[in-house]
Image 1 (cartoon, rainbow, N blue to C red):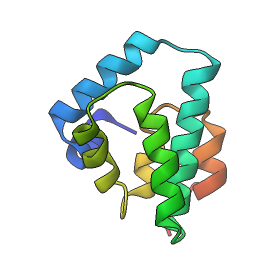
Image 2: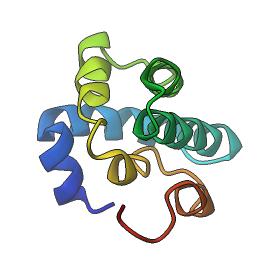
Image 3: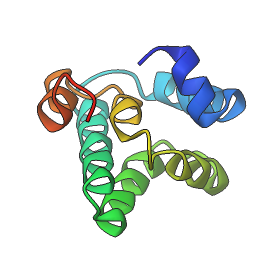
Image 4: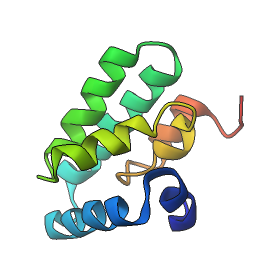
Length: 105
C-alpha cells in the first residue's frame, strides 16, 4: 500500500507513530508474522467476523507498544478498507493476495 493511501485511511500522525515503532523492531520472522496476523484479521473483518478480526489486529498492533488510542483509531479505519489495510504491517506479499485476491470485490 502506498503511504498516501495509508495516511488517508489512518492519519499521518498515527501512521508516523506506528512506522517509528516498526523500524525499531526491524525485519525478520516475528514482524512478518505480525503482519500476517494483521492481514488475517482484516480478512475476518471483511467477511463479517469483526470480533475475531479485531482481536487479531489488536494483538498484532499491541506488540509494537503504541498507545491504545492509536491502535483503536487504526482498527476503526479497517472496516470498508480491509484489503488496503491488510498490507499495513508488511506481511508476506502472498498473504493478502491469497486472502483477498488481486481484485476488488
